[in-house]
Length: 235
Image 1 (cartoon, rainbow, N blue to C red):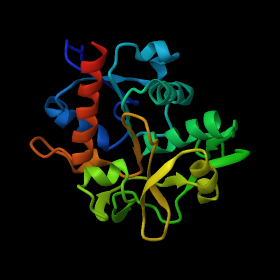
Image 2 (tube, rainbow, N blue to C red):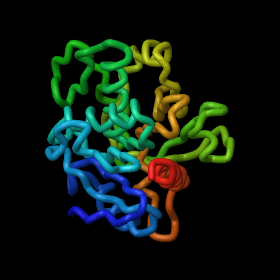
Image 3 (cartoon, one colour):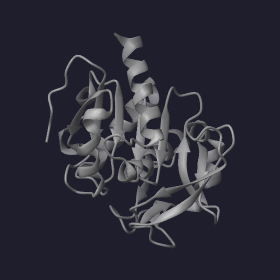
């Protein structure tokens, strides 16, 4: 399901369409995002050039992806060049993999869905499955994510996932510059961002699942505003 992008700000929806419940919800709200969005199947990504011309990158749910390396290339492009990035569920997990490999130096960091015997199991099964669940989200003060909620300290979000960050790696990622901006009530990370980047946020929760025409989640609104701002600067 690929739409031809028009002259407005261009947003790449990186994912394998049809693999996740979030995808039809995304299709239902695309006309109201204020940007021209285009599905980019992961198996079409051969490198940064595959995302040329896009003003924003959203890695959507649906992990494991058909082309993990393509997803990681898209994330690295966004992180290193200042393209606004949003990663939800799998996009959160893979943003942490990319950062761990490229910045922290954990070159074999992986998701056990791809390799059950991964030498560095960064993404592992959650202690409690969150498929179809709502749960409290504690927000880190002064983070970009907290600003989305007008500085609130807590909210409730909707999940559809079974995997998350191996908490043994929180300290290494934090020391290398990741800001974990959302937590569950047990102290497990549920959102992360890169300070200093125009917009780089990953969340284990899926804001698209609670969005509908006329009711777009504030995180998605903040992201698409950043995409539009980036387009205005680069054109």
